[in-house]
Image (cartoon, rainbow, N blue to C red; front, side, top):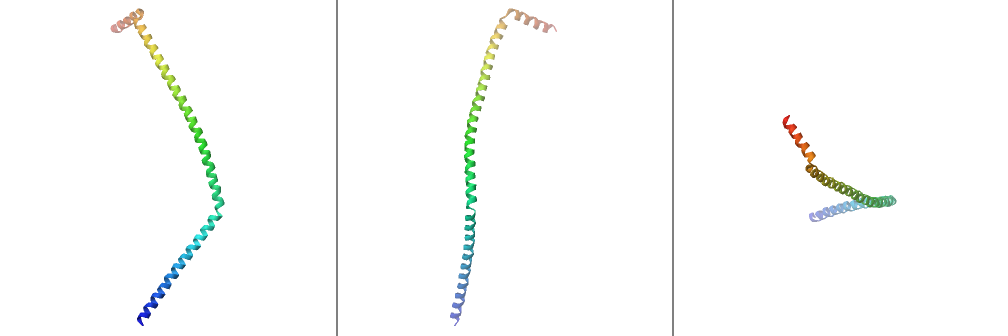
Length: 123
């Protein structure tokens, strides 16, 4: 008799467990169906958003190519202007060295320089 009592308790417990599992699966199925319906309803909106994102990315690609081209042109212009200024500085420097050497060799300026240094020593 006790054995029959324990078997019936286990059987009832298994029925309760099975009912709980089936109830949870049923609730999960309802949630999945609602989510599926929501995705089906929003499919057109999702397609519009993806098409818009694709168009934006294509425009960004074109703009970035133009930016790179403009950047390279500006870079070349800047390098050219720097090279020009460097060449002109070297040219002026070489001219100044030649002028200074000629002025040092000039007798009139040497005499004036000696006179100025004499005047400086006197003062």
